[in-house]
Image 1 (cartoon, rainbow, N blue to C red):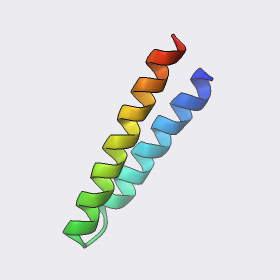
Image 2: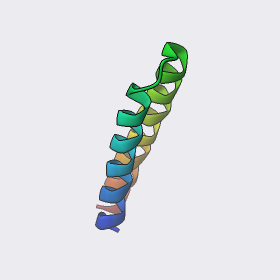
Image 3: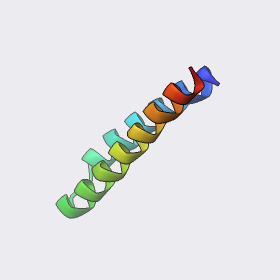
Length: 50
């Protein structure tokens, strides 16, 4: 499961890099907020598993 969580975090990093290239500031902001929510969910899941 640790590998899967690491892969999820890496995927979020990749999405963030791709989103940073978008021209729409509003879209970048929404994506950044969504990514942050997902990071918090991953942290909670990691705590639950340990």
